[in-house]
Length: 314
Image (spheres, rainbow, N blue to C red):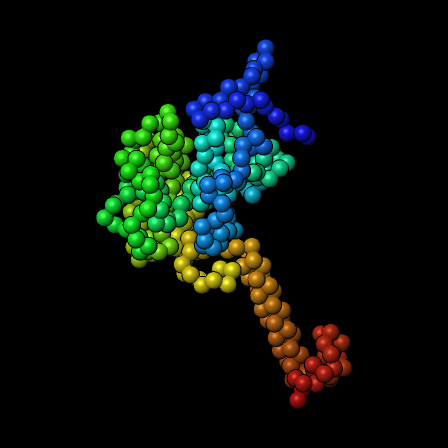
């Protein structure tokens, strides 16, 4: 199928879309992910390797009881377009999860971006990784100017307008991430993690506003009852890098495994089962020999080699 095309005359504030008579539905005439840019020339590439590896661990350990891999979508550093009033306005969450959407766009194509007016469902979980220039936008009104990450003071030129929580002109300037997730997308679960201080903060949408949830400082872990999954800080090796990572867990606090770890666990379990079966077989051979059965009879009965049985007899 050839993607739909649109004739758009764009300005910074609005777009004008030519309409037919009778008019078509908004989904047919508004820009789709094929029409919107998938990359921001102002922000080429990822900031560091952590922003590449950590989202992989989140996606690969995610296991939701109520959703299969076919009816949920995870992404990292993907353009999220959220308003038809300003169709080029977007954010790029470090990692986000959407449930009740097909894994593939229209069940046939990998997404180039996530276009809210096409998809209908906003994210259920968003995770942002703090860096020196993003604290203010990521934390919104919870940003403390006196408490800096180990990297030093923020250099984000938009800090003053973002921290003021609403001083910007909503008609001409896009909202900060915190405000967008809280008041427009209404993301139920919002996490902010600093790998510099190894601090995880969890903001839950309650009564239309984010309320920060207390976490045990010794074993930071947040439980999401609607998704029946928890998120916590794990120290270990991922992709050959030993570090402190965010990782999903079950209600008992057991870390959920990646696909690779599951395969390794299954291989080790099968190896142990084979060793145990072999030990039991050799023990049976020893018992039969001790009971007076000759070597040939034991080898035939237990399907063992003569050498194996002879080693037992010795």
